[in-house]
Amino acid sequence: MYIRTADSSALPQAHSGGSPRRKEARRCVAFDLIVPGLDSSGAREVLAYAFGVGTQAYIVETSRLHECTTLYVETGSDDINDVIGTLTAHFPNATLGRVIRIDRITRP
Image (cartoon, rainbow, N blue to C red; front, side, top):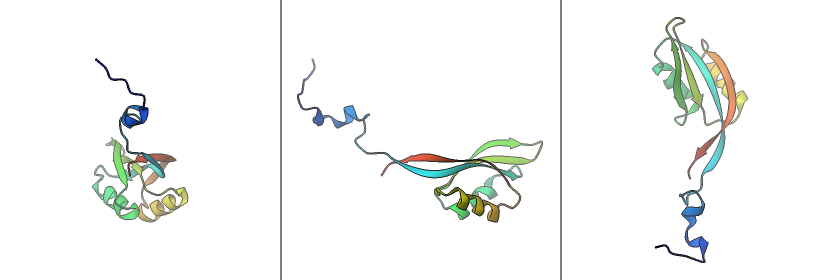
C-alpha cells in the first residue's frame, strides 16, 4: 500500500536529501605543517593558541628517521597571508608544506 499526494511540499526531507536543515560552506585555509619531534601535543597547543579553538589538526605522518611529525591543519582563517605570518611567528623551526583554500561545510 502507498499513499499518493498532490502536494510535494509536505515532504521536504525526501527532496532535499533527508535533512531540512541547510548546510553552509565557509572558506578557510588548510596546510601541511612539519614540526620537529615525534610528539605533536605541543604543536597542537600552539596551533590552538595561534589560530583559535576551532582549528583542526590531524597527524598525517610520523618519521622516526627524520624525527618529525607532519600535521594536516584546517584553520578558521580565509586569508593565506595571515596564516603564513602567524605560522612564521609561532613555528620558527617548522616547515610549511602545501597550502590550499577549502570550503568547510558547517550546519547553522
